[in-house]
Amino acid sequence: MTKDNNVDLINTHKAAELLGVKVGTLYSLVFRKEIPFYRISKRIIRFKESEIRAYIHSCQERGVKCIQVLTSLMKLKA
Image (cartoon, rainbow, N blue to C red; front, side, top):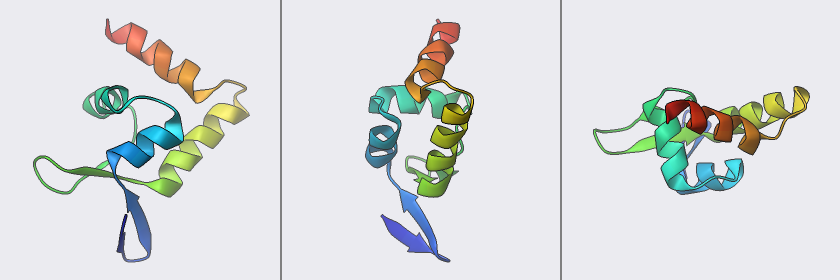
């Protein structure tokens, strides 16, 4: 985790852990621009922990689990 202007950036493993998905699923969401991310370099992406938690919260407010939302997104991809 790095700090930049009081913003906590997390790596893909931590973001996937927070969302309860595999890293590969997270990369698919990044590719589809379904989740906010920050490209640090050509091969490195990071996430704001607050944005991941806000995403999870928005899912809960709608009465669905994030994994259900993510699974439905992955089905649309196929």
